[in-house]
Every structure is written in C-alpha cells, then in structure tokens.
Image 1 (cartoon, one colour):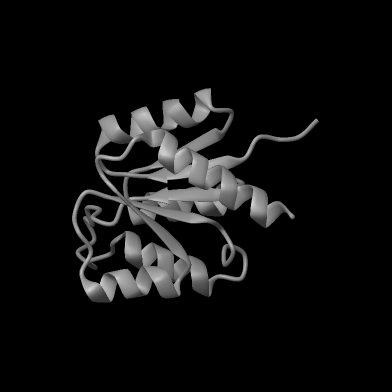
Image 2 (tube, rainbow, N blue to C red):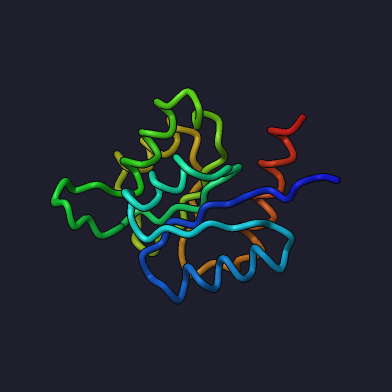
Length: 132
C-alpha cells in the first residue's frame, strides 16, 4: 500500500487554509495546517511532510518579522527539509528581491486567486519527479 503524500498548508487566512486542505484531502493528500512560521516549525518537527503550500505574508506575534520567505530559507538550510517541494501561494506581488529569493531557493510562485487545481497539478508533478 502506498502512503498518501502529506502536505503542510501554511496560511493565516482560516477560510483559505481550510478550503485548500479540504481540496487536497479530496484529491488524495494527507494535510497538516499551520497559521504562522512557528506553528509550521512545530508541525515539521512532529509530522511527516512531503511538500508545503506556503503563504508569504504571515502574522508574527514574536515581532521577529518572520514570513513565509524566512521559512523557505530555513527549509533550504535544513538537511532534513532541503528538498521539500514548496509552492508559494500569495495574494501580494513579490518584490524583485523576493522573487529572486524564491527562485534561488527552488520555490514555485502562484498568485491568489488561482484555481486550486493548478497548484495541485503542479504539486503532483513535483512530488512525482522527486520520487524518481
């Protein structure tokens, strides 16, 4: 029996996070949810995660100005998570330096609103190519 791919959805807007997780579940994925960088790090430390759908603009109650891009950089610096497929899903245009950071760190950018199936098809392609 093949296990389902586990996707961590990091999104602070609960309606988007819930809808994305529900859609991924219907499409055969297992999902985990986080609404901040800190919550995402807790999930990454406790659960199997095969890919991440990541918002860029996330609240940071610690005042450290953490964002989805900080999490992307952390993932790429981590031996354990270095090769996780990461889809950036944002409603705010990225600056040229942010776009470069995403490109250099192997992220894939999608802008809201975007049909979830576009992301899921791309995610399937990334997961299938990393499995071979």
